[in-house]
Length: 221
Image (cartoon, rainbow, N blue to C red):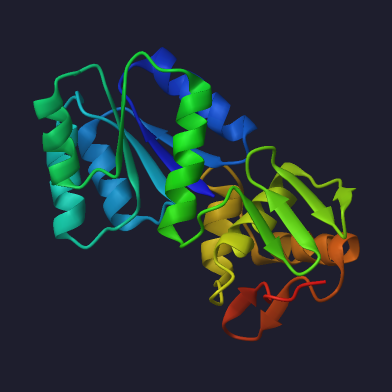
């Protein structure tokens, strides 16, 4: 899952990015409003963590522009502003959730997981597909009740396909959400990753549709 973190405070930005990365997300971080607006308007993200008090362009304006342009990714607003009127303003502008500073990282992660799940129609923290179980809280995958040892990249790929198992996901979309911006991405790297996952989880866990992309069948075994 690829997440955009928009926070102008360097320490807070790095702390959030570190926590999200260690929790299985591919993270892009920006610290000004204009860059944030452009990236959110032109690239695909599973979620955006957005501070409101930003240089160059404020968070409310960014939200309004994204929503006006049909960008529907979930947005979690972080801000030191604590009044109910400001929270209402953020939600009316298009925010999906609101977390005032200071906050606990455990709560941030719980809200991120919940927003991503709800955005693709999943209510529970555990996703079950046939014999495959993905626990999004612990980032653990099991097959037939037996824990499976996956690398961070393997987990990201399985998790993304599981969240979007109702459709075929293109190779370029998978590359974005598995590797993000910080990797020399190539299609053969993705193929190698899928090959390893099929060896670990079974040949039918990921289906290839030539010319379209990849999917995870509802009855994966």
